[in-house]
Image (cartoon, rainbow, N blue to C red; front, side, top):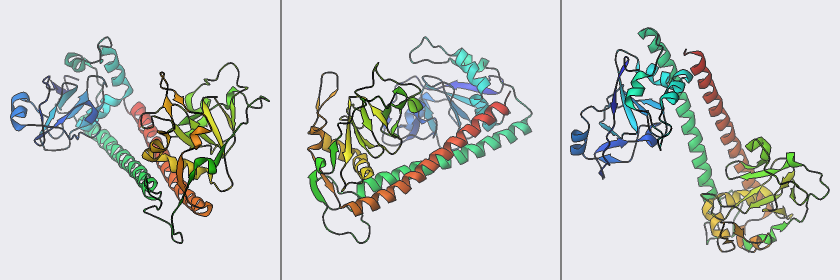
Length: 383
């Protein structure tokens, strides 16, 4: 590496951030090379005798090891010691950055990393000694251009997925009444008037159905994910975490609603999801509910997908134990107030949001395929 690029260290000084000035980059900024943190021009001139320029490469070297990105701006950039700066010597920058991501170079970087350090790191001397296999400069340029184009396509699709998720977040906020209100800000044509304030128990009832006939096995145990909803535990997590017996596990039919009494980062009182997949069973730590005829079960999920609405509903009902477990019975989790429309309006909202979810899923699958395609090219086009 040292023969194809000059390698420099970032500043070891704790940054003195200012409101505006020279952008300051660290490990968390490697994918975008953009930050909202700045240092003064004076600090930049004092601490950066050699700074990133257009066509240089920044690579992570502390914590995350070996993620590289090409600098594509003429603006001044400052960077922390967690990054290293590579200035190519008669080498194509895109080829060199892509080489760093190839399996061969990643293996070399891993072997030269100080794993006993916390966080783990790789010294500059070890980066310089990493072995590369390079073709002629014209072939480097061709390969580099190819991967730059592929990365541009991947980035565009990442941005599209992000926008679709942001749009859904807006729908979940605007198509349902705000906390303390009874009319949504955005509504389908033909619907007017206030939504009804009722107890959640008016729309769902606690299910008492247990797996006492052992019609379901450990292969049918379900997990509840904030992002993916209700999924088969083995398919999602690779194994079953069920106890010795699953006889007392709750049966979850398609369309049933499950309350997970365990905290998540954005949902400290648990989450509520609807089973859109096959029937299965859940641990006794979960509450299972049946929808009433006036209830579209997926409407319940969408209603509680907005974190503020979910947390505001559960907080008054739940007491946390010493082990951060939820002290609330299955029935008492239903005594809070919700604001729901009639079944017909529920159905239309659900249909609309399901179509949007399909767009998100299709975009996520496309992005996954592009990522796999890049991995194949990294294996096949480098030696």
